[in-house]
Image (cartoon, rainbow, N blue to C red; front, side):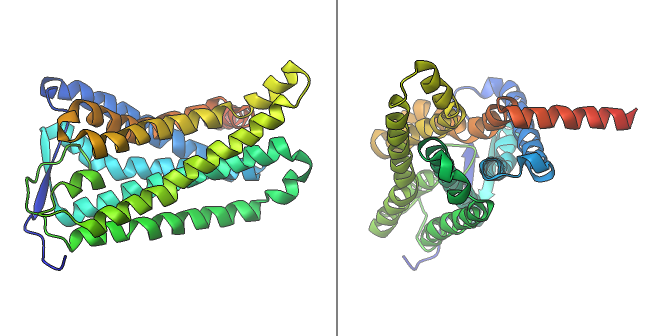
Length: 313
C-alpha cells in the first residue's frame, strides 16, 4: 500500500463494437450535454432570480440542478475526447481526480433526492407544520451538509488507490474513470479498498435509498387514508416528478453496481450502456421534469422569455 504506481496513464475507451458509429454517437452525446448544461443552468438562474421561486422546495430543485451540472462537467472532457479520437490516454492522477468528482456529485445527487423525499413527506403527512419544519435556513444547511458528506466519504477512495500499485492492463471499460473499473488495475487485491468502498456505498446511496423508500411508505399510508380517490390522486401527483427522478438515478446505478461486483469483465455489453445511462440521462432529463412539468417554474420561464423578447425588440 505504500509503493508508487507503475502505471503513468490509463486508456479510456468508448463502446466496443460500435467504432464505425462514433461520429453519430458523438453528435448524440453533444446534444445531451448541451441540453444538460443549458437546462440546468437556466433552472438554477430562474430559481435564484425569481422571488416567487425562493422557497425550500425550489431551493432543493436548484441544488439538484447544481449536482447534475457538476456531474456533466466532470464527464464531458473525456467522453467527447474518446468519441472524437476512438480512445484517450489520461494520466493516473487526472483519472483519480475525475473519479473523485464523478462519485462525489453522484453521492450529492443521492443526498438531495433524499432531502426532496423529506420535503414531500412533510408536505403531505404534516402540511400544517410544513413552514416551520422545512425552512430556507434548513435547506441551505442541508445543502452544505450534502457537499461536506459527499467529499468526506469519497476523498479517501482516490487517496487509497493512489497509494496502491497499479500494474495491470491500463485499459478501462468506459470513457470516464469509475472506482470499480480502476480497482481492476490493482496488482493485488486490497481488503482495505474493498471494505471502505463497500462502506461508502452503503452509508451514502444505500442508506439514502432505504430512507427514500421509508418516506414513500409513510406517504402512501397517508394517501390511502384519504376517502376520495380524486383527492388521493391529486396528492400523489405532487410526487410524480420526484419519483421519476429517483427511478432515473437509482435503477441504472444499482444495476451497474451489481454487474460490476458479480458479473465480471465479460458483462461489458451490459455495464457500458448502463454507465452512460446513469451519468448522462439524469442531468439531461431532470431539468425537463422539474422545469417544463412544474407549473411555477414553467410560468417563470415563459415570463422571462417574454421579458427578454420585449427588451430585444
